[in-house]
Image (cartoon, rainbow, N blue to C red; front, side, top):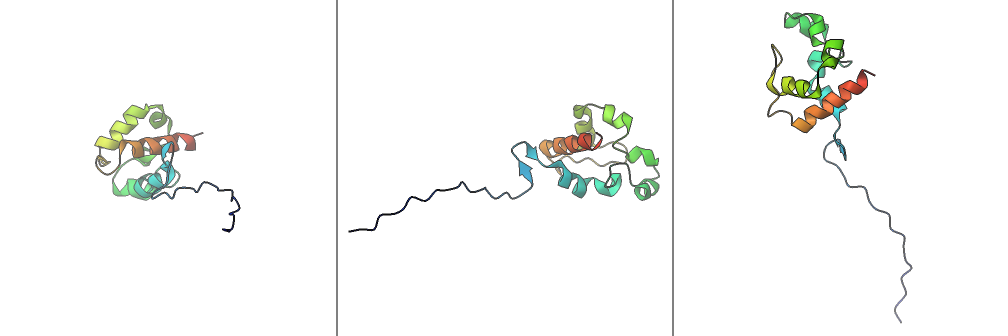
Length: 111
C-alpha cells in the first residue's frame, strides 16, 4: 500500500528581481544615487565642488529649490532627457520610467 502524502501548505515564493523595481515601476532612490548625485549631491541641493568646476551658480544644481519644484513633471522629464545648459542629455541612458521614478523620488524628498 502506498504511503499517503500529508498535504503541505504551500506559500507563494517571492519572485527575485534583477533590479530595484516595484509594481509601481523603478525605484528612484538608487537611480538618483547612481546617475544624479555626483552633480546634484546626495541631498539634491547641489554639489558645490561640481558647481565650481562647471563655473555655475551653486543654486543652479539644487533640485529642491522652488523654481525646480514648480516645474511640471513633463518639463523635468524633457530637461533630463534632452539636457539643458551644461547638464548632459540622458536619452538612451535612462528610460522615461527611470526619469519619472527619479522625479517622484525628488518630489518626496522636498516634503
